[in-house]
Image 1 (cartoon, helix red, strand yellow):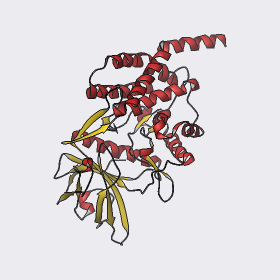
Image 2 (tube, helix red, strand yellow):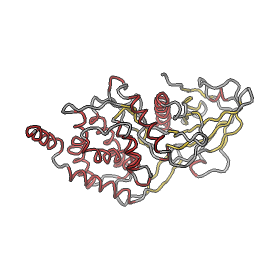
Image 3 (cartoon, helix red, strand yellow):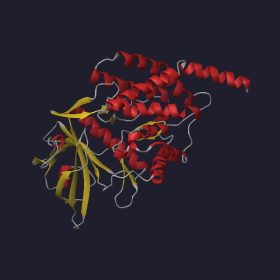
Image 4 (cartoon, helix red, strand yellow):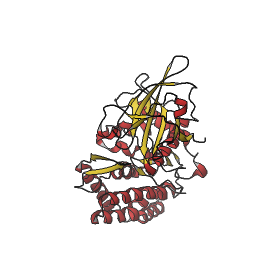
Length: 384
């Protein structure tokens, strides 16, 4: 499936979207009355007219709007658009399109259909992504329906990555951090790259930290090999499947009409299916063990089964801790600049402390790394 892109969007005029929050004041939106001119190449009805464009949703990283249009037959259709500035913004919009396109292929009823991504012709530093709009509630998704959808995506995509490798075709972003999606032959290799990227961004944001540096060295030398290498050694194997990677309640909501779970804002890659459960570990997300248990009613825990909880902690560390740059205690506010528009938000100190505590726990539990596991496994086999 080839991406629908637009590099020469015509915009006759643009305006700020009325009274908005600080992060929305930077948002310029399209007022051209021909939607086909706005997104050339997208599969949109000819002659559709824009009725309204209003802010929709909330995001620290991008600017989001809802676009209501009237079709030739008098019916109405609604679309969702988000935009960002600069080279990073362009990369984010492309990654969003490719992520959602691939997810939509495997779950067309639960992922909004992507329509286009591109760059504004008259604003070459501003980029957008557009998809179908769904009206959703703020409730948690139904546990049975949600876990069934996630498991179906994993099962239907399992073993279908290019050359059965781990990674993704383009850079995708967890929050505003670009993921290292270069292809790898092993899951351990790919995950180590991804975690290293997050830690590098953490250091750029806050500067070096001696304790974190010591823990990081032990994580890569001992913990990551110990927890991930056994998945693909000793006659054990896993297959890459499509991962959303940011499945928290802000990105999964019930459809307001059907109550079906709608999944969006993916940072997709091909990886170990259990990696998608990492965000569910966070108590503040109210998903937790009950959702994990329901998911594993569809897909069994990977072997070694006894490593499951610590693998989940490792996956949560990447998905939740470092993406928010909340690793170093005491540093509780970060600034992100989108174009020339600074945006500030707070990171609770307790999350930073938890992240450090989790790293310490894993480092202390696995001082012998993979070699200790291999020695124990050989000993157990000899006894058997």
